[in-house]
Image (cartoon, rainbow, N blue to C red; front, top):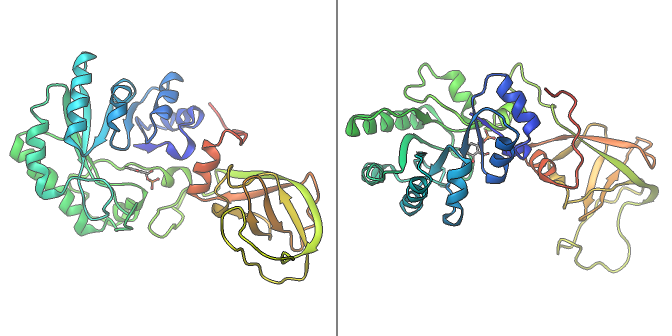
Length: 324
Ligand SMILES: Cc1ncc(COP(=O)(O)O)c(C=O)c1O
């Protein structure tokens, strides 16, 4: 399953993913699922997080499957699905230690018992999420436990789970190393596909590009100035007392983007420049030995957070070089 939230459900990117053989697209935002559906991208659509009670109607309309952990929400999904004369598919997320979403394993059987009584709901799988909140590794032991839970549920309720969804890009190393993936038959991959990295140590995945996305911004001021602010120092825009290294007089280049446009801490300049800081609409660079002038474009590698922020910012122009 390819995860499209990092690119704000971009239909152009979704189309490429589907053309390369991916049949399921997952996103955490209903707006993104709707956007891809409206663009007629032929895939099965998964809402990657538990729906809010206030949005279940749209979930039934725009997601074929949703990840769930709360009975009160699943009951409401069932009612709405029945009203719409359809079935809504769900994957139940199980807590495996990362401590974000998930039903405790010891509560899973009684939970499923109740889910199976709901006429508008089709239980199609179980899943888990690792290394997202608590940084917990999906190691062999954790994955075997998830696999055995799936087998236990299938035997106990005489059903067959179409999805045993083992995790995200943090599962890449486990998947490559394991001798048997057991009942795990699905991963939900965002960063591994989009930025070519596994996410436990952010190692590049062999054969994949890590620079498919580049953030480019234009210099709007370039002047030699001191490296340390002068005058009486109070809080800055972020409410902190900023500290700067004394570098003497430096070329300070300003870009016309700031933290309302991009997660600046997730940008790495492609040239030998330093990011000194940013306010909401400006980012200040130490141009070092690069003679950056007004009008020059500065290119950056993006990490996942920076990619997600710029792809979802209406202020940033997106240029696609390869499209279908
Ligand atoms: C439930 C869930 N699954 C999968 C993913 C994809 O994670 P990654 O981009 O690390 O593959 C995310 C986060 O984006 C998520 O919240």
